[in-house]
Image 1 (cartoon, rainbow, N blue to C red):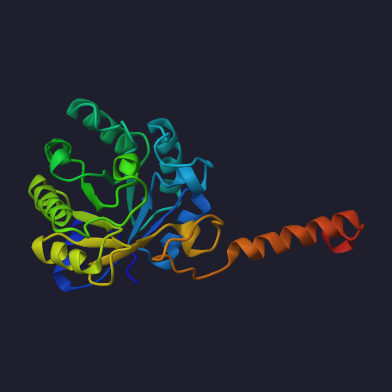
Image 2 (image 1 turned 120 degrees about the horizontal axis):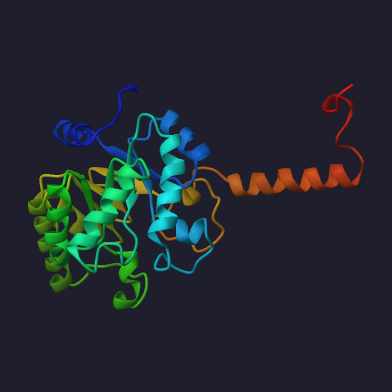
Length: 268
């Protein structure tokens, strides 16, 4: 594993070399450091933290100030991976000027190297405006959680040709606007393959099959820290939540039973 900092140029080079990108979310310094040292290419501070870290029912209530605080913490633990921050709901939809200001905050105040925002054709002009000021942008198409109400829930997108065409058009518009990568979420793998073939930037799948140029998972899903709904695309690589519960129960028992602290864990 290279110790050199991953940059947007690195991401493009990996695409050219046919190397797959590994992307994982983080919400704090400790896990960011673990991901960085493990060799993850891109650490994403996703607005999914509203659900897994803040206990909200959706990503919609997450604020810019909250995202900046979490991103700043993750930045302190990320020395090699490319750090990308999600632009939360209403941080880029109101006006291009506000979008540029908020994107700039992520770099200036929080230490991110790039931002991610959801949408296709309808946000392309905003994306181009952000890119023009020197802020790298990652796109996000398909199942876009900030549009959950418009989609009628967390449903797979692009199963009909009309919606598939919208996603394809959106991918081309985002590429023209200057994105360096596009997340494809919650879509049939055949459509993800069409999008991947249609654009020259890397695609990063989450519930979009294996053909994408990389894959992303929410850390809490990957490690089994999240006890809520588990989508079909999630693979748990560990049961950290179960192990943490066991450890805390043992601590409770030892404190209540007078077994902790013992001589080994006390000062003379």
